[in-house]
Image 1 (cartoon, helix red, strand yellow):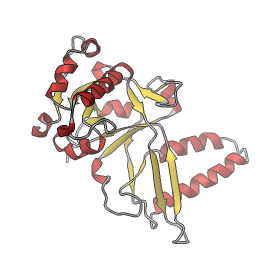
Image 2 (cartoon, rainbow, N blue to C red; image 1 turned 135 degrees about the horizontal axis):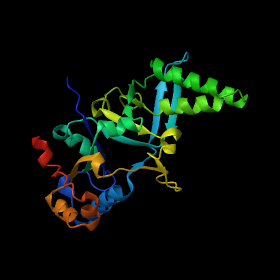
Image 3 (tube, rainbow, N blue to C red; image 1 turned 180 degrees about the horizontal axis):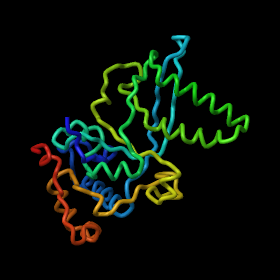
Length: 247
């Protein structure tokens, strides 16, 4: 199967996720969100991930919880993304996967997150061992722990913990996870704020398409000076969530 080159960052789950519920207030909030993205870049959020893994005592599985600054994308084709929009929002920014790869992004590593999962268990044991090295001030332990945290940031459960419904496996998620090397290259920018702590800037040439909630919203976008300045002399496809279903 040929892999799609386009990856989409969907946003707006905190605003409105059903086209039928769009109103003036929701469209205004979505417009503010889009203009913020165009001016400043993608937010690197801190979702909480909880994973469980194999342990000798079945009543006490090994547990791994982490938060890492990240921005999420999906490889799902736009025509099949309706369920995804209902979970994550009605505004999509579409980039080529090279944009994500250049920032050391990658597909997530889906794990079972089950009491019989050896992948999570091994990660927990390794991190516990590294923590002991840090406490013992072993040379390079801090650097190795930082690298391990970067790797763990790509781990995602296929299902909600202990419920093997595989609801997340079909999301085909990619992530850009924070790394100090990418920050030094200014591909990730600190904000000196708690939320978001980092942004991923982008320019017009990085974006292949915008997907917007509906046609009324698109009209408002075209009237916005921030959008016209950002587009410049390079027009960009702006399609609605309904239009992409016919791709």
